[in-house]
Image (tube, rainbow, N blue to C red; front, side):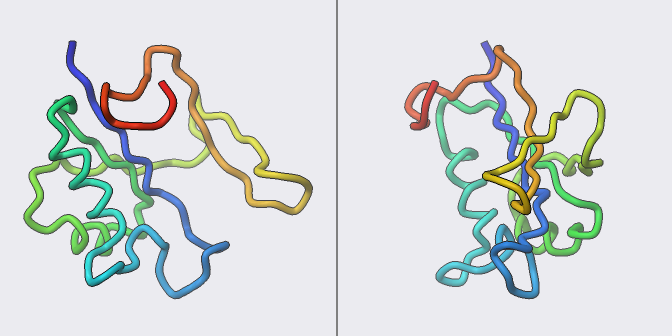
Amino acid sequence: MRVAALIVAGGSGTRFGGEIPKQYRRLAGVPVLRRALLAFLNHPGIDSVQVVIRAEDAALYADAVTGLDLPPPVIGGGGSAGVGTARAGGPGRQRRRWRSDSRCRAAPGAGGDP
C-alpha cells in the first residue's frame, strides 16, 4: 500500500492576522509550511507529499519549498465539487472547507487520530 500526505495550505490566514498567510510566516527563520512538509517528507511511512495552495500564494509557496523534492502544487479552487463547507463555531465565524473520504487515514506513527 502506498501512502500519500495531502497538505492543504490554501488558507488566507485572515483570522491569524499579518501581511501573509500563517503557513508562510517564519518560525525561528523557517516557514511554518516548510516545517510541516519536512515532517512528512522525512517520515518513513509516507511515500509522496502533495500540497494544495491558493494561486495568489504561488511566490510565497515557491520561496517556502525551495530545494525540497515535491511535485508542483495543486491550485485550490475553493468550493469545487466534492468539497463541503462547514462553519467553525457559530454565526460570523470563519467558513472552513473539508473533504471526507473513509479511505484516508493517518500513517502509522504519524500521530493524531486514525
